[in-house]
Length: 429
Ligand SMILES: [Zn+2]
Image (cartoon, rainbow, N blue to C red; front, side):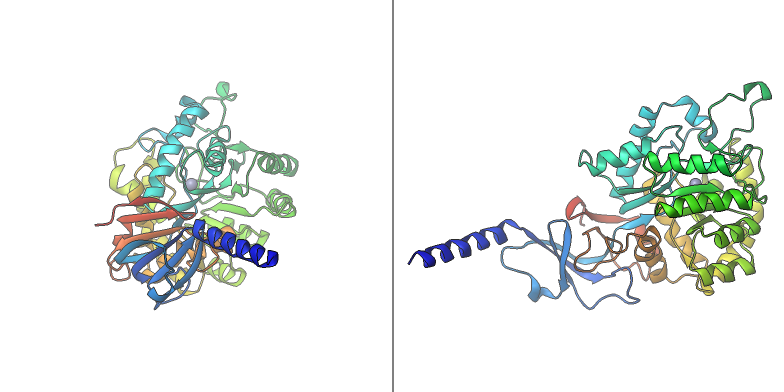
């Protein structure tokens, strides 16, 4: 008799536990899972806690599930921007921004920017260093991870590491002003590089960012030059690799790209002057390319008269056609091209231009969506956790009305956002 009582109690407790685990059923028109090359046959996603529990048809919906009707919507994994600088203010002069604003001010600006991005569908971002002497974007990351604020998952490097006179240095002050604090880490020689990499990891970087070539946006350096020596590059990648930290290489010049790929960089940022040999090398080694086309579009659309961006605008105008032709070749050759905007996130809807830009240079809409979801998560090394819609993965889910496979620009109008099972936006029309 007593055994029976105990059994009844156990059954009751199990039922109670199941009742408590609220299941949400998202009912969709179409599911793009981020890795399959066609929409799924399924129309229902079950979410329990922070994870996807199952994907199937309506018959999988359990009794008592809360349902979200997105039956005129295409549902996708949350978008991933592998290259953005959310601490910035798009209206300020980026070259002096870090001198004029405290880390606290930038963290507040960053919070606004990343929350805007989340509302536009970006559930994870990688910051390749930001306009800060400190590590404000990691404070932001930590606050979000603690649950203090809703925001995207944040990964990245504390700073860009550069040579003296490179893109992380300030090259427009006189010689007498050489004590001016720079926003990058300036290193010369293998031992300074080693120290810089170790410090970056110590203070929370899960990526190392190297400015292997000159940059488009900084004064006084040339993006077609290689800045780091082979030795410096080898030391950086060796140090990072031993700590399981991947390296992203900002590399415009063809030679800088090839040097970085050969040395073992995991991603190439910008890759503007990628040559045929570089394409072959990247395809063979499986190196990811983050071409950041949106920043070029933004220069040309909004900043024609900007003195601070004069160099970047001129270079973009001069080289855009050639850059895009090589990118088209790279896509055809099977280089893993992924989404990164290089924006601050201040105009979050604008970030989705990266998808339409990638389609313009030769991707199918499906490839572009994968480049900003499943493939981007793979580049991040987080594809076991998120980036695709599969049971067991974190429930980072977005939806747009209609079919983005026939109009990629629909990705600029995300109406529904869920991150880790929590609905943070539902503007269903
Ligand atoms: Zn950048």
